[in-house]
Amino acid sequence: MKFLLVAVLPAVRIELNPTVLFNQGIALDTVRKAINNANVRRPLGYLNDEQ
Image 1: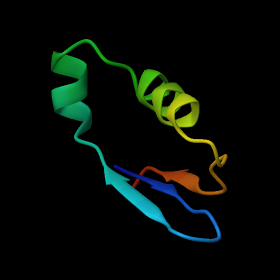
Image 2 (image 1 turned 30 degrees about the vertical axis):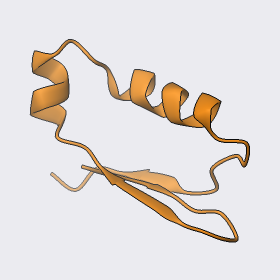
Image 3 (image 1 turned 180 degrees about the vertical axis):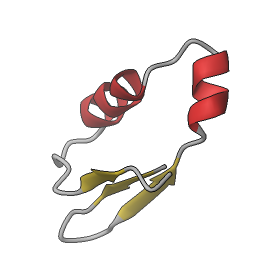
Image 4 (image 1 turned 90 degrees about the horizontal axis):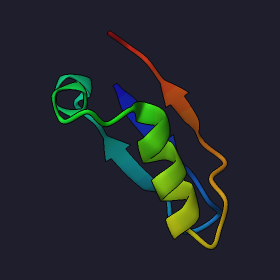
């Protein structure tokens, strides 16, 4: 599973391991919200689920 955040400059690519997140009790939406809240620029990317 890949979560791609793209801004004009720079682009940030984050690869998540859904199994590890699940085992730690962390939802993908929790990660998305944390990234959104930590960035001044809002993401213009997408969530790609290529399992």
